[in-house]
Length: 150
Image (cartoon, rainbow, N blue to C red; front, side):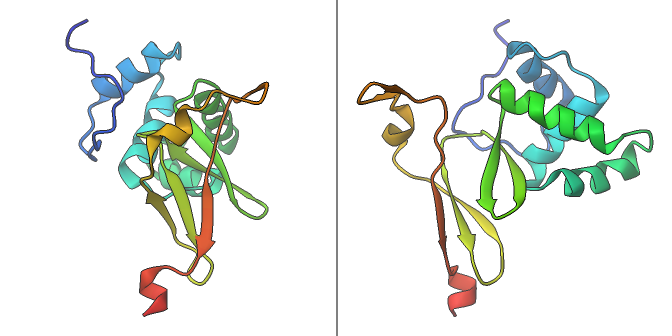
């Protein structure tokens, strides 16, 4: 399996292959299906921190038999397997992001855009803290982005 690519901090382009996606899912114990591959490809290529509804509306055009429940279940599976993270950066809405590399998120309180922010990876490598076992960490920042500030 020397040709298999591992997820690294390198950027993944929109031209990600179905073979790569299938290998990524298989490495994490997820059986690749058209629906799962499509949801994962959407997250990798769009990088827009979408909700279930946004993903469903986009993919339903390509896969008319796709249900919102399938998208929801697929995202939950990808979160459970550590491929995707569920963001709670916006009140009352769960958004999803491919875990391409450890990063923080910045929400512009004016325009609503969410930006990925590279930060020191050491913070994400903390596994214990004063007797606690850390299973997940998210750093969410809020403020006004440079576009809205100008």
